[in-house]
Image (tube, rainbow, N blue to C red):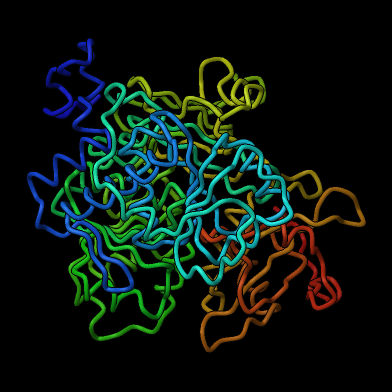
Length: 549
């Protein structure tokens, strides 16, 4: 495993000599904030949509005020605190303030409501929540478990007569600026956050993350090509590992971040240029949106040097050439720590990269036995650094045991590996489609559909067939100024996909439904199924037959 010089130094006061576990000052939020406030106090750390910005010193000050406010409400080191806000300066201060006190940051997806929201509140064990005023109304009429006090951010008029005792954010941070002394030092293995999974198909599980897990996930050893000189665009929300994790990653490096409230294709490059962004992370659909925008003379007039595209899109090489950035891809999820990372501008189509140092990966069958090279199996992961992955699901021992059975974390994702060590994502195990005896990867179907110039975004789904098993439904949204001709799309796919993978149904929407973290809501589309306006290839008389060899 690669060990940085900082990690290799003695852990003063920590009582151990494990070189894989860095000192508190390298990976714990409180000590990082104090360190950079002293070393880079006047330099900019965070820039927001509203043109507000925090220097490192201001970031530490805001976090300390939040920590002091929480302490006045009775929150102690180790307590869980809910944070339910969009991406705002207050949300970042809430995040770091909770950790500055040594408490546990528990962000909630801003899409949650009803039973799902009720479940997360109960599961969290939180007594205090810092909530945006626009979301307070959703708390009315549901069970609030142990929740006893709200701190309300934003327009107080929008939260008239809240369902619990409350404090306005300005008053909350307006008291004593210094929190009480810590009961004990905050250690790298302490729980830093509980991050709830998206909950699009069932009750969300709370992923327990230590400081060392959050540090390792996008850290200097996992992503050595991102440095403290970078300014990273954080365009995922703070309840998502792609938001809070990137903010933490740059704090650990002493770098800076730009935090727009949401992703916008039209405003993306102007914002990147305005704020001198040097590193960006794009979900595949975001990269597709940018790729399908009309070329411009100033496509390279920016300072970006590093771009993550996850998953790697068909046009990644063209993206690299057009925009003049080094493209990387990875495989990651909230529970793990970037086990698969690519080289810059990978030339192997569809790869996620190779295993990084410090990680072991296996591909296995349903009995946890390894599959043959080139065969599809579930990816299992473990690391040699203690606490470098999630230490379980909060209050879900059975789910934790299932995920960690036989000493390996089970990702639930199907992969294959080639002889050169490249890994290729095939599908979520639960999203695989089986049609007339053949297994179909929704991911591979989507990749080819996105190669069709008229398609901006898509989702491939299994829908019931009158013949048993599944039929393939593809839901598409057109690129700007275009329309999708289903028959033309099918003829395009005939030359690119195996015959059994060709969709029978094509449904067109102006935009696919998504979570606030830009994941397509496949469960919703699957529930809607074949709608009245869905085009049927068989009714159109297009018959796909197996090639005769």
